[in-house]
Image (cartoon, rainbow, N blue to C red; front, side):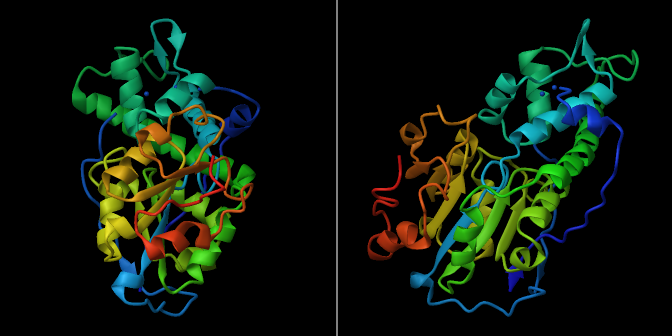
Length: 320
């Protein structure tokens, strides 16, 4: 059986996309209020995978943004385009997230709505006016409504950008295919992004056949707490019935690393230009590489040592 989220994509074209693609910039925290049900269904394009005994089985779990595809700049452009469309202003200044500031958000706060709440409440200390002078929200309900509407619009813009620019990071699909072909390895995607946003990325980068072979997909809508809370990874381990100590997570950020280690899992970091200066080893990373492909990372380099000793060093001679 394959445990996946049912995907429904509905692309929406907008004239504002052109502005975002040409460099137009646009800019802030609440955990989702409810847990969505993740449905189990038989894989559509592949037979049921057979697993070895539990003590011979491992799991390889991938984050999405920054790991499967380097999407952070696309997220930033989509947020800024939504902010511009809503005409957000705090005082006389338009709301705009720079590359440097988005790097801070990415490594501090998990989830898009949380980023907006953090920006308005912590960074700016005020919510913006919007839509040609509409007053800033003055109640928690009003603040939530504005953030919800911004996130929905941002997601539409982001999906358009993904359709134009999505490309898997080097080595990711090769490693995933090795794992999918190995009956002793369970494979999943765990992303704090919303189902709508991740759906498009997985459709474009993985393709339907590869996606349907995944054993688990846990997304931001499916859990009550987002990274750096470990819930998304502990939930994945429960769904595939495997001890967290036998799971290896591929992440790209401090937020993701904290979630993986908090769940009791090993963690390999594939850092990006926006996260390369972070002290990943100081926070418990088991290995870090600039890209899986550039170092020729293989399944055996990760799980070979663990088959002999669970806490053995992984990616020896390959990692930074």
